[in-house]
Image (cartoon, rainbow, N blue to C red; front, side, top):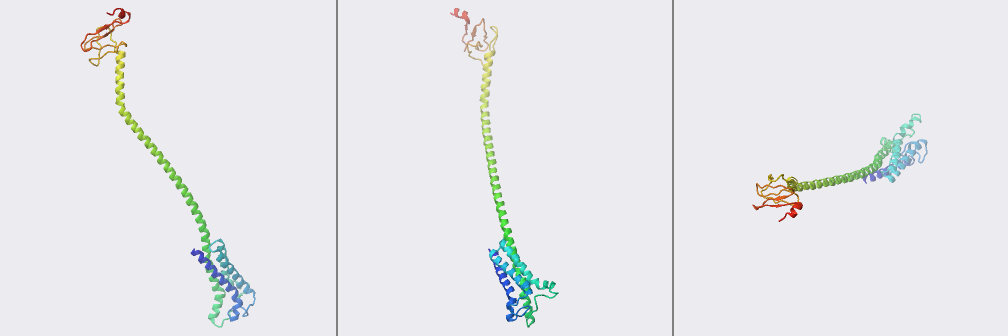
Length: 286
């Protein structure tokens, strides 16, 4: 906001200075304050090139600065005013190139040395320096405004890109965290299952050992001829008929098949009963 105000204020001062520089050569003779012919509204080539043209440039530049401020059009107005101010300052000396080594601005008419110095200072050199300084001050403001808008646009684009990248990165972190949480939950469930399997393993192993013992007893418990001992794990083992297994009684009893018969040993010290198999058992039962 401050740059806007100062740029427009500079344009106003440049406008006033340009009006002064363009009119004073024609109005100054009324009070004997001029350079060149001491007659009001006297037109000369020197006044056209050295006063009117730079004054017009300063007035135009000042108007553009007042209207445009620190924008691109204000930059253009500052450049025009800068050219007019420079020409106000150096024009009288440069005119010596085409005026046979004499300044085309003309002689000063002041009665005192200070008056003659002020005539040259306020009509050309000093006026040109003032316009140049104000135009140079307004020019960076216009340039900074243009580049500032570009920078602001670029920063906004960068901020938008950064926000999008940040959102994508946050989404990626959330997905990674969710994946890690799922893996941790699966590992915990596996650990629980492992502990459960470990707890159930002794029971399963015990059942397997019992089944193996029973299988060994069923498949390998048939003894040879009568009178051969059959080894048992326990002293009192009840035989399971129908499978041709061995029958166990008290320790030291003998059992074995005789002609397809199955002998059941005594249980708890009682005498065993011999059972005949097949037709002989059917007709020979008492």
